[in-house]
Length: 116
Image (cartoon, rainbow, N blue to C red):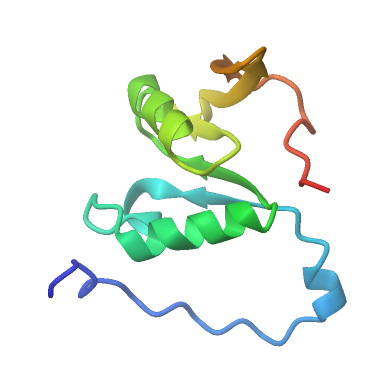
């Protein structure tokens, strides 16, 4: 089955890291457009890895050049904590308001802390 992975490039190996230093990582910011996606498609293996990181409690913030409408959808449907759109022009996150979640702009630095 072709899942569009033929154009992916291997990630260069990182030099060995101190495990105690790696434990300090609280979150991941990552590019969406043909970095997390491949030829504009979000494949199931990438989405699954995103869920795994989310369940481990990492703050996840994808970034894109896409407009607010795309970011609204991403923020509401992906397992993330915020999304940055239009090449950094704005950031959205979902906040709890009573029994529902509401899309809001992220204006407060440090509000994406890792789950305890």
